Length: 519
Image 1 (cartoon, rainbow, N blue to C red):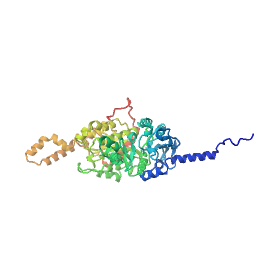
Image 2 (cartoon, rainbow, N blue to C red; image 1 turned 180 degrees about the vertical axis):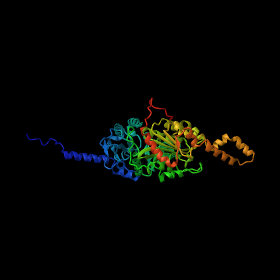
Image 3 (cartoon, one colour; image 1 turned 90 degrees about the vertical axis):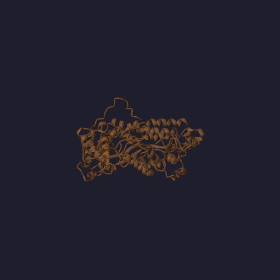
Image 4 (cartoon, rainbow, N blue to C red; image 1 turned 60 degrees about the vertical axis):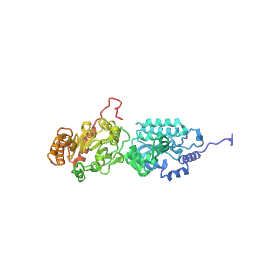
């Protein structure tokens, strides 16, 4: 029987493929050219351009490019672009698998609604199940107000998964991540914006001052790197990931390294770093660069609490975390910001099995009512707690001052360091010579004054005697409080050998759910 020509015919395979391509083109250009040009005019890449910049070429596999929101409130049903306001998927960086999501400000201002939230949740769950890092590229106005409580609920589900310009609820998301990179003059984060602050408190503040990239890198400490532009941000992210493992169950990548445990000319330069006078500052980065593989040091949070330096390096091609007092800033004293900055870093390294090297030159805690009233006792204890609970290999080197409670807090032997060495320039005591003389030799100073002697000369002599007798590193070594006194030039070699010996260190097993760090 002849077929009825009026019956609809099934589309050909070629037609189906053409339809797919048309739909995909619609998905990747969902916002339209005008919105993309507006994004570029602000000096910002689109969500897809950012992914292309970050990942290895051709490695991206997209998820859910054809999903659409289901909201009909406030005329939303008139605009239902493919993919909604976020691009998600997987790809590689230096050949290593990562999952990621990139919010698309050109679609609904990057706002998070039900479908966008579901996309992020799906890719996060994928990362958790495959045990790979997840990267979020945030460019969002916050929750989608047209979708109300449904949008807020998605934030809650995202936050739950993370306990392992953004505004409103969106800013808690980066606060729960391990590292936050912000672009100067472009990135902004705040819980309440300038308009709300003005209306409620009368305070007049601009967006950059309130929550710009410089503010969060230098003042609040929420961010960890200030990028000059988006390209710089992605370059830093790619380098940072090279130091980190895919997950806590595996080790970070090991890179080829020509290590010579014999002392070299490079090592001997460390003998010249410490000034003859204990009151003269120096740059501790010179020491860091002298003990890690050449060119491998990557600083984290360089603008926040610059009196302490944290970052990653490599020793024999293996990742290490580094914490060091910085005498070039505030004489390397510990304050609340420095303590919290380094405590968080210790916790991160411990969580991911990265050994920690600590360089100590600390005259004590910063005195002052502002420190006391803002909780230095409680907040300063975070670093103490972090070191005490850490189970990764810990190697500490005292380069100069190690005074009082600050000495104990800075990865001391008594707090759990596996190996603790001192340079011959080290001074280990309850306090510095000048302070000790004022207490121990008050009577002698009074007698010198009454006798018409040069009191300051007497004070200096007594302080020197105290330093060489009571604060000598050889006294600490004699009593077993440290593991030895080493020549600065031998430091790299000692660390290399120490880390080799500690590769079989067995982590302590916790008997409880978790400790109660003094938050």
